[in-house]
Length: 297
Image 1 (cartoon, rainbow, N blue to C red):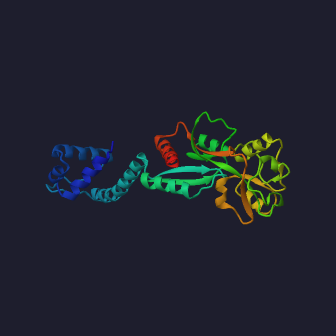
Image 2 (cartoon, rainbow, N blue to C red):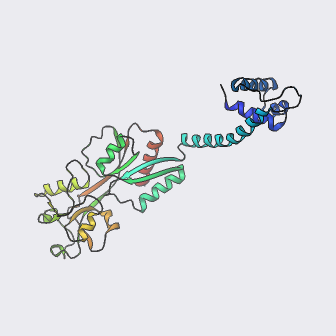
Image 3 (tube, rainbow, N blue to C red):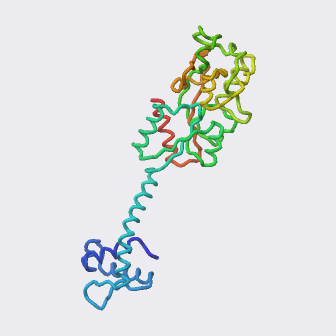
């Protein structure tokens, strides 16, 4: 069976001009070196050296073999180095998803940037609903997710690390007459308002949480004529089509004509958690724990 060492021995013999010089540089006995070259020739089924001369002389086939092996050894070493880096977690691409209700703000980007530089890891970031992230984790389509509970899917096979929680706010048009002079809003005050975001029948996430808050206040949220569960819901509020309950971090992405007012109940928070599959490899687990630690600090 051909081995990498046999190729390296062969190249060294040609470069040094003799078996003796090559054996000294390689720190192996000349007889052992000769034996490895003989085994190489037996495997490839042609002679590399013309042994009728005392000097090292390549056969015609040996000259072609040397040139090709020499060139390809450079690529092979690059492949080995790259593969070794991957085995150590370097140059690994980790796929991250976040729900549209979680803003990929400066803090999150900075954390990923610091980890990327320190660990030589690459990140690919995309948007998926909280519910879809759980399925994508289980299918191996993503490695780490940022979600807002609750989700309807079971989390038995998922590790969950809390990152932060933040107060919920009401997004409304700046000219909304009913709340023009209000500094805060109670959930029950939204009974007659149209909501531009209501829960999907098969998903959890922020809209599901908001619906439960409304039900607890004694009413079912009325659907606006146009709805969205994505960040575009703010554009619908800007068009004065209704209101929406959103996390405080949406303040960073408010369009013109939209303002946020806090909910009166200080206990109304939305939690953001990091999720990853329990059976993931150590690199993903370590990366998830690093992200968690940096959020806590």
